[in-house]
Length: 249
Length: 360
Ligand SMILES: Cc1cc2nc3c(=O)[nH]c(=O)nc-3n(C[C@@H](O)[C@H](O)[C@H](O)COP(=O)(O)OP(=O)(O)OC[C@H]3O[C@@H](n4cnc5c(N)ncnc54)[C@H](O)[C@@H]3O)c2cc1C
Ligand SMILES: Nc1ncnc2c1ncn2[C@@H]1O[C@H](COP(=O)(O)O)[C@@H](O)[C@H]1O
Image (cartoon, rainbow over all chains, first blue to last red; front, side, top):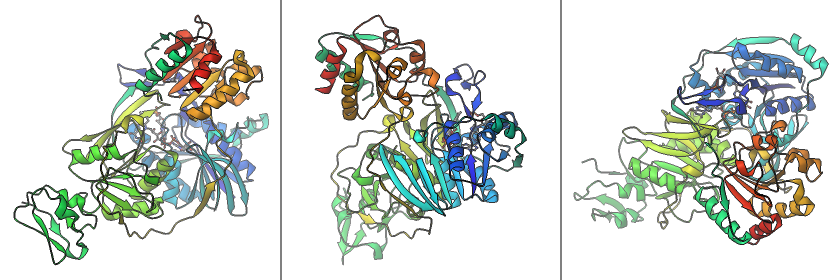
């Protein structure tokens, strides 16, 4: 079975800052990492005894190291997509999906893994969009997977409930972070990663139909630090009123 | 004056339009509606007509299904207020879309459309036929999957987790705000493609005006393209909560003990919250490692509410909660590091506070 894992080299969110003078997110102190959900996707692929695990990423040459990390934990082939596209267009899930689909159509995997949603964008749209474009069955937010021939059985999380189900290959799986802790790379894996073949594919991306107007910050300027006083019951009552007002409950 | 036209073979003679016309311009002749000279083209009849027999020629979006659709699975009308607002601003009608004829919304829309089955291929086919200007839904796992797939089939943009939605004047477009980077920042973007597909979070969900449901649900007869099938059901195993996904986290320190965590669990069930704890609480064996709140775990939590019971606030703990929108510190001491990093501070017997919360 041939499997693809789509990897979005994501910024370490905690190391980014907002530059109000430039109206931009300042990522100069942050690094890109291989997200947990993508690592879990590679683990699933190994566990389902895939013959070939292809890591695919639309990213710049500077972030190739993230693909090498994918090889260290089990990817057997690496594909980096290069395409001329304005920065803002790379944020549009429809553009990202169309670009990935073009590569997936030529690789022809029977199973494609995606992270459920990345820390950066978090619209959780790429996996479902690719499934629709390829006409593959969508198994969303999976935490467990089994395969018997071309029948895939899964457990997944949806709006606070656990679901179970099945579908026939080919499938698109999006991986929920609750699927577990990803395996760490072995010394052998790290050595193998340096030798794993990496192809660069050039594609023309469609233009986004979303206009980016502005980026803003929601960072908290500091806490209110309000001391609530009274009997426990009174405090709880006051707290509830405050939380209601802030829309926290 | 571009008065509506009557599609004679669609008129079922129900008379809904006759009743709603403020200018008494409509009447039924041989069970088919006719429009008199006194029509002032207010369009009320067009949105009242469930059969699609009253249309504006050549004006897409207004005719047929109406301008703004909102998904109301199971009769859930959370997105009704925003749909109504956008429809009013655009001067169009709002329609609720349901997938099951028996799950009628209680109030709100001008029309109810029934799209049997409710998967992305059927929804996309219905949107192609009826050409709504926008399709909105409350932000849920289910609605995000559905609208993302639908958007891909229609090759239009999709906006998920939107916290604000405003019409763009002079254009059939909207401007939305959505969070990025775990809610640390947000982007303001304008949609250039139509229809606009979006799921709405708290800030973008406007209260719905209560309105009696007057029109008859219209069953859309759509022929979906063939596609893969996924069998799914609830496993009945309950939910496995994850901290990264939690909207409300109740967290405890070692001092609250086993009993305290039992109370927290009870409280969490009531509030739909997830229970977590400090590194010290995990080290004391009070909860499993995956429930630890500490920066060194690398786990990113960004709940809208974080309530800490008996947590003093180590630097690692306090660094891990910086993305929480509201932090509440409950402790029997006031001078903790956490109190300095909290929005609300309750200093009292911790157990008494827990019990007061439980008895609310
Ligand atoms: C400045 C800025 C502006 C933004 N503007 C918009 C906007 O206008 N509209 C909007 O909808 N979103 C916007 N976003 C969010 C956007 O970046 C999304 O993250 C992006 O479109 C990916 O979609 P997603 O969130 O659905 O997928 P994600 O949650 O980011 O990723 C899901 C999965 O898809 C796969 N994947 C994603 N990207 C790649 C890739 N490059 N290569 C391989 N696999 C990949 C991975 O498997 C990943 O785990 C913006 C973000 C930023 C920082
Ligand atoms: N959705 C995406 N798809 C592909 N690459 C992306 C995506 N989002 C961000 N990137 C990469 O991240 C770089 C900077 O993006 P940003 O996250 O906006 O700082 C871009 O130059 C891309 O290489």
